[in-house]
Figure 1 (cartoon, helix red, strand yellow):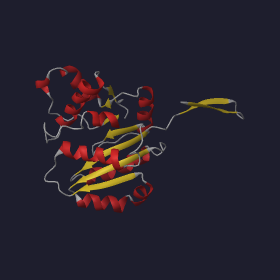
Figure 2: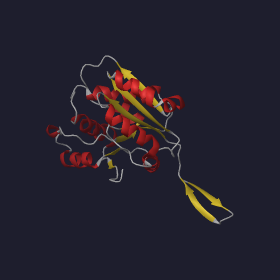
Figure 3: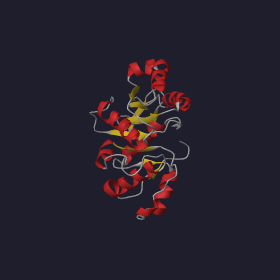
Length: 224
């Protein structure tokens, strides 16, 4: 945090630090109706944080890809939005799609060569809430080696951690935030364990806990 002082009003206040780079990563296949609402809202709700980008991978969904180009031309030109399409998709392989979009952000996005780079997973129907990017930045400033995810995932993992046979098959809300180096350290989402929706997030968090963090992740507050 930076402190500044207004001499005319004799008021001191805290300026939030905004040097951490954040990439919100989303995949889309057949969910344009959701994405059209969430993406616009999420960009507007995080407009006050300058070092943020939204990376969207349409997984064999050229219709959604073309609609992104039509509906978000300014965001694409300014670098606020990076879009890509994976044409070879057969069905929807969830961990493969998520690995692709996170690696696109990490290796080809605005912050590809930055060290303080956070990858934040968002499902196509996830709203971030106003000021979420600033919250993520503040969290990682205080806890540089931390990890964030939704409370449903934290609660499930904390009750089953160490019991490898009890990997959940339920959805956990999609939202997770991690350091770029931690994502690579655990080799991202496990494409050999599952191709379906639900356990992919849970398996990644287990890998993070065992191989990188060795403690429970922190919960994203319910107001986001």
